Image (cartoon, rainbow, N blue to C red):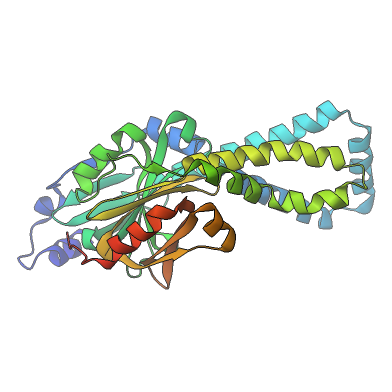
Length: 336
């Protein structure tokens, strides 16, 4: 395998020792970084759901007498026992999620050789992948709920063309990285991308629309809840939903210069995308009636991907930015 890799790397068929020596910058994850990345990966919700599904399906093989005993025991138990059981399942899910992440990204190594990024990772099954930098269409920086308070993030790239290395044609270049080190990472591995300029925040009048959107379903259900016992719970649920809306508003922003466009938004995790101007396939600017009245607009960009395309959206930007972005995209694209 090493001989074949060496033969494919150069027409002169470099020796195995020459091929194994890194010719550019290299980054490796220590076990402490790997553990921290696993603990804050946010995969606990998926594992918790899988455990719940497995337990629910397992009842089909349990005799009805046993199920009756379990149900009666749960009813007879105090609320403290029930809460403790849920917490125990949550921590079990967190442990399994962390273990899954460690197995997947163990021995993670990223190195740059000429114009090629080479990645290797895996504990049980080791994967190796080579990526030409010119195939990168967009860079994605993600900060989940558990990572943002500690200024931690991960870096993915959207790749043009097919690859079986990662699902959805996103390749993970940094499973975990501190926010202050991101620009240094770009300088070493992706020197054409810059994150030093701050994004322009959304206008204050956009906050009301973000609050309405985050509470939309609940506002529709409130009339029906008025005639039920859960009316007060509906109002209480507006508190966390409103906090989510405020976070989505505060995390929204954009910045663009002659070469790239930076979009910052949040659905669940905070996502910052950096896209070079030549890699934007199309740019769409929309205004509904209410947005036109509030002097706001919605921006969508489409980036090539396989098998289709990737769309990045930022809602309720300043109306003045709409015409500026249209002019910016309509001018000649500068190839970097």
